[in-house]
Image 1 (cartoon, rainbow, N blue to C red):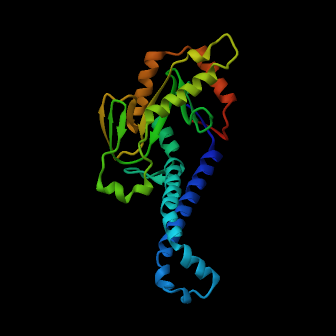
Image 2 (tube, rainbow, N blue to C red; image 1 turned 180 degrees about the horizontal axis):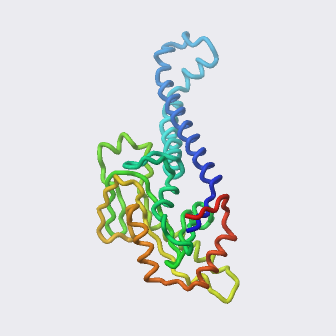
Image 3 (cartoon, rainbow, N blue to C red; image 1 turned 30 degrees about the vertical axis):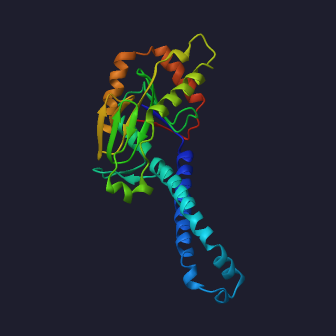
Length: 267
């Protein structure tokens, strides 16, 4: 399996996440400190400098602004860190990014397969092979996830309160998969040749990378997989689709030519 990875983009978004997180924490800290201003300057006469008088006059606005602004910045930072930063995963000794975990789950597929990791503008994580085209929506959080039809949710728990800034959230992975599939299909329709790449089957799956996730599935609207189920899912799709070799070569070459990657690895 060939892996086309846009490492600079991954590293850029990781740095962006850390900056947003630090900015959010700094804003929250300043908001907390501003609430002490009435104790520091209880009377107008106690504010002897222009800065002190300004803080004394406007501290309620600073305090009220800091809470939503800090929360938004911290949430954005958490989103990027969860998707792009290395970490130690439960039950594993390796420190890996989510894209590296996904790559490892697919290790062992032959050279007919190509994995595009953040190198295509139309979709973030794409596998091309005899299975057709598969897009993956990955999630890294642990805990319980319910998927009942088209409803994806995480039941409330006390533990989630203490990890509110450290969670990615389940969101709507089915919609994410469909949007990426539609963009890919439109892009493949621009291929000028006798071969119509837009006819290649495009499917997807939600992949939960954390081994400590608990899945409660009742006819989910998209395939929901643990990390150890991904390779089996791919091989089952390959038996169903059986994409022609000429079509496979054409689509792999087309995506490779239009992808932005810095490393090509053979797994």
